[in-house]
Image 1 (cartoon, rainbow, N blue to C red):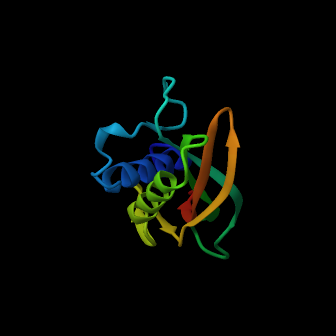
Image 2: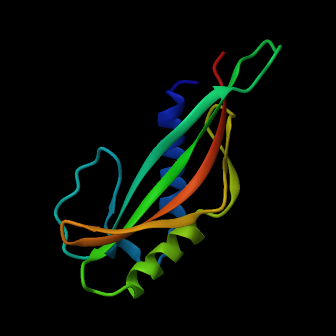
Image 3: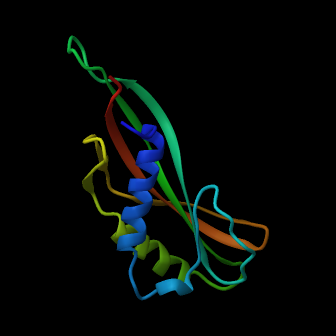
Amino acid sequence: MSLDFRDELRQTLYDQFLTNFPTEYGAALPIQLENQKFGKVDTPFLSAYIYYVSGQRASIGTSKKFQRHDGFFCIECQVPEDTGMATLWLMAGAVERAMPEQQLQLGDGSYVSLHTSKVTRNTSQDGWYFVTVMIPFCLDVCIE
């Protein structure tokens, strides 16, 4: 694999999300991605990141070693506080539709399986109210 599997996974998930996010939002909805400049906004926006949970060896007695990595592709849907929940739930539903259960192939031939998403974590911070859409994934990667 030419890239680290974490970077390959990140790019695959971001590409899938940005390609499939419903066009009714168009460019009007800012999306903050990991380690990319993001200016201050005063309108609803999304923030995406990957959260790794565990990793383990997934092969026994084979000439190649496989590792299985589990985690969540998380997308926070954020709206200004005291603006109601309607826009927030529309955004969360659009995120869920953009990332259905599926299997995606990475550039090296490895696969990542996406599982059913869950909307969680209603909270507010710094004048923003948000929910997080968590998309569980399982990545099997060959390390040799």
